[in-house]
Length: 289
Image: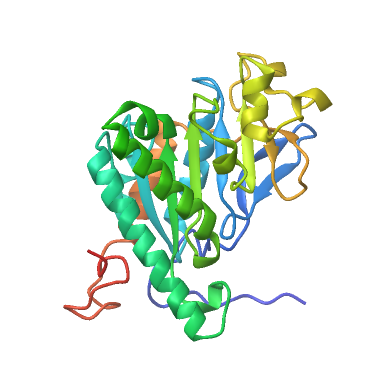
């Protein structure tokens, strides 16, 4: 017996009805099977040489987050163009400005502290979908730009410290971090920071050591080296996720036109309606100066 759900009488379904607590489709594995990751309680690090497909992975995640009913986006993109098409969907979009990047990370840290105070008051250890609070998804394209290129040494060190704190403590507060770098080296991704990322994706690397810096020490010696990925096979990567063992995947590719269409739709459904939030009422994010 089949049943047909009645058509909605008002409102526009988002995604339709996607949640950040739902599995996110990121591509296929070497056997052609779909690959999903659940990001709400995890952080993801992507590393590899330029043109390997890291931005494709970030755009897949950004698309899901932009269409989710319970998500807010914070984007840091030193090049402006990798994540720039999602700007109208984001609460904050930071370009090549380390002062603005530090400001937004401090605000996120305060939101995180406020959420943990709320959890403690309710005898809880982590947020759930039933709490009604948004998952604040933080995407950083090119860690090295903010941690080693722009700004003073003091600002760079503060950026790394704030990012490490957010990666270390943000998961249970509903603030996952997805970060990418084309310079997988110990000065950019120290072991103390890398090991905080539960999920790691190594796109093509030029040396086994660079692959190990992303995936973890020893994986290249066990046959999981991103140096094996052909330069012409863009989007291929070794992914460590739920299983804890690297698996070969091919990241789903979104063209610029497809990203533009999804971002335009997501921005439209996220537009203020004047109905959900009373005039003069600040949201959780807006209340943190």
